[in-house]
Length: 387
Image 1 (cartoon, helix red, strand yellow):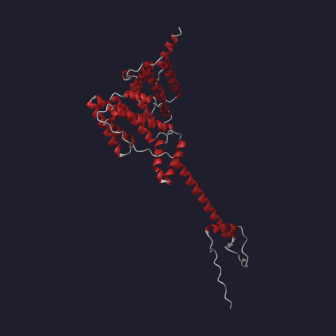
Image 2: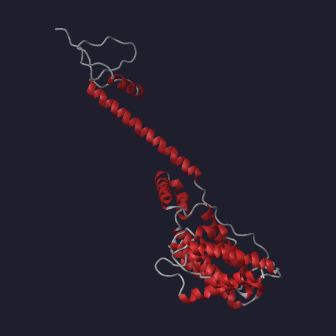
Image 3: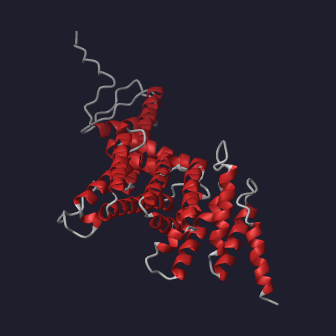
């Protein structure tokens, strides 16, 4: 009896993966196998499968191709995001060492040490258990400098506090200029992108963390910086440097406009700081600390404070669950503003009162600060000039 050839094992071919992929597509559109064996072919041969099996295999191949394409698109997308993400800031460096007898306060060892403590306190988040320790250290060093009472020691405190105030104010201004206080819909999209960045590449987690602090409608980082500005301003007032804080804060016009659409909690912190510095801007010490500058320069600095922060006073005085200021504080602040405006030139008074009327009328939620008396008095003086 003639020996039968061994049966051909179905689904076993010696082809490479590319040939197998082509075979799957080819078999999906081939007719059913006939009962006669296929004619011999040169080189590799395709094994024709039944139509249901071929269709299933073709769908599996298409599914794999779709997954590969999706994976490639996501990879390219997050690689692009990681390339566009801002690089983490370099570690802070101490200023070069100078001789102990150097006349500049910031170039002394005590000045560098105090500036370093304030810088570390500004970088630590409030949730860190080290924040209170470093903040308490800065408080103790500043209080000891105030008790010493020396001229050079006071200059050390003023220089360190002015530098810390300027640095924190720049950080808050940079966050506002970079789109920190965005609409809620955009904020949700940005949060989704940040989540994808953390999931896709751990290497960009630091950049995502920096975005997490920078982006959003306010956020803990912005509120912390605003609260630190108030604390630094109070410390500057204790050592006779409140004028420097008023000049710096009054020049932050971009921050003042962005504060109008910030979170209520952030508005509260900035409003308290503005009220505190408005009082110093109207004081006699503000004029005496000008260092020989003419009255026009002093008036312009006061006007800058009004231009930047009077709109926030008109719009952000209600608070989240309670008024930001008590009734006595509100009445006192109205007196401060009227006195401040009366010290301006004629044209500046007109500009300040026009600014107040615009924002006061545009905010229906509050009737403070009411400068109607000051406006009426200025208009009566203007009318007398026509006689």
